[in-house]
Image (cartoon, rainbow, N blue to C red; front, side, top):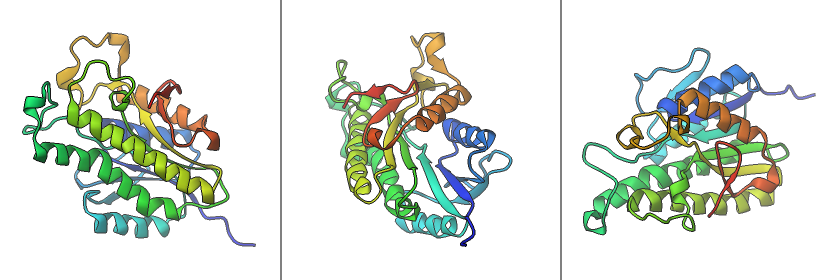
Length: 242
């Protein structure tokens, strides 16, 4: 009888929410190995997690991670917890006058292209006859039907693009594995560097710590099945409209 390989969960991203997700998965104890991936080798990784340094904007770097993960055991869950809303040079647009081709492309590469390339190389490592999960951090503001305020054009569009890509991937994957789950996750407003400049007006009870948000997201993933694939879910397990 073939020896059962250790189960592996991978979290791509070691920011506030990424590290919290890795810690929660370790704490939960469902996976024998938890792997964290980041382009920054100096990041803090939860005790007990393994670490790969890689840049998800470089497809060859993603391939290297895939090769490394293949040797660790059976990959059963991937969460891509990366994203950008602002940098020193890039700010979410308040008006179409602020649109810039370079900024639009930059935000899309991080929020959509990167996660999709991770899916391209890591989904094929997952077994075909088991419940397996690929999830990427999305955002409620990526909902087209729920956009009533406008603004943040590049960020909204990049998350909407991600949601559509996840939908397409979910359909293709389900043909091979009906128990596969490919979803977007809305973590709520998390107290992190990404949201810090925009926390004014957020009620205290709606500003989540990374630990709290991660726990809710992991619980949400645990409650999904193959019929949920292709959708976006929030931290409370509710569907985010397309």
